[in-house]
Length: 110
Image 1 (cartoon, helix red, strand yellow):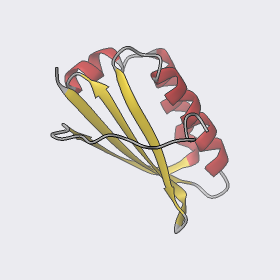
Image 2: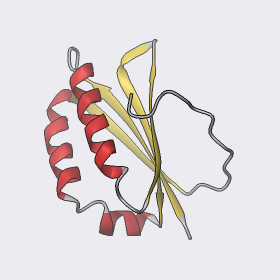
Image 3: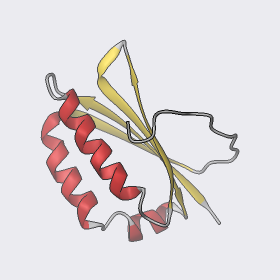
């Protein structure tokens, strides 16, 4: 089965970092309950405190994602709500071609 990688780079307005992080964690918690969900990682850089990078892996193609996940009411509500706190967002779709294991620990839902 195909796998889709969704990379999202958030540029956050000053003073809204914690709000965006809370909302992002909330929507990822909901995504994690979906059968097509594989994983998600939220990253930040000390040099860019008002930016987050989100990497999501989903079972299926981008078309599958759009047809199944893109129409979820919780996802639409999140996107409409979080927009007000963002300067801009960059989205990249990819198809993974190789994978190695993860040894991240202590970060689940943190």
